Image (cartoon, rainbow over all chains, first blue to last red; front, top):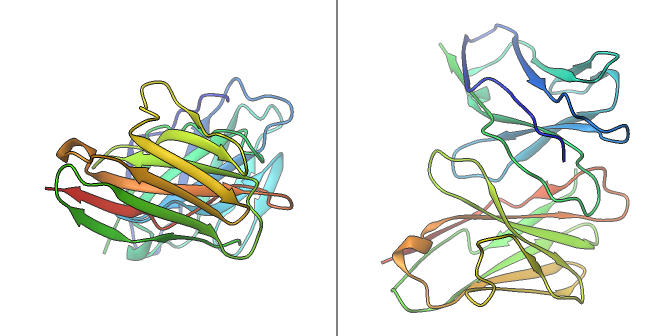
Length: 110
Length: 115
């Protein structure tokens, strides 16, 4: 699986938009990009997945440029409850092993 | 999204005893299940991959005789930590995927404390 690089941590304030960029220079042609959210003492929760351009759901948006070597997770108007670790992974597919990087620890302040 | 459960959610045991953790896919059939371990402030580390009806594949450095994995059905995989020691204390998480699922779904995790 392609290796991913993302910032170790980010601070934000309630109501702001948080954008986390992930680099995946060696992404394969068939790889999707998947983001998970993890709260302390809980399993990761699927947030969003995309292949190219833009994907939006009720939780977040995922922006993927044409070369697909990076992606940006956008969390609109964060609240305190969005404080968590966010993981970017590529190549998530049925039967594939996942290699988690360090993730980005997002702290939302009041 | 699909739901994966784990039982128990936490367990405390004495050193030398064995502990079994169950992972169930509640609303889909999981052809593949994965087991991870996570230490405090660290990322998830894959321990093993299990496919229904076949032997699990363990990652390098994971003792297969210590961490027994059974995937007897398409909805259940179990991880047994045999002769547990304090260094086995960790957060164990399973995930599952299957036909029709676009990604892996994770269980809520099991906190193991070995005294």
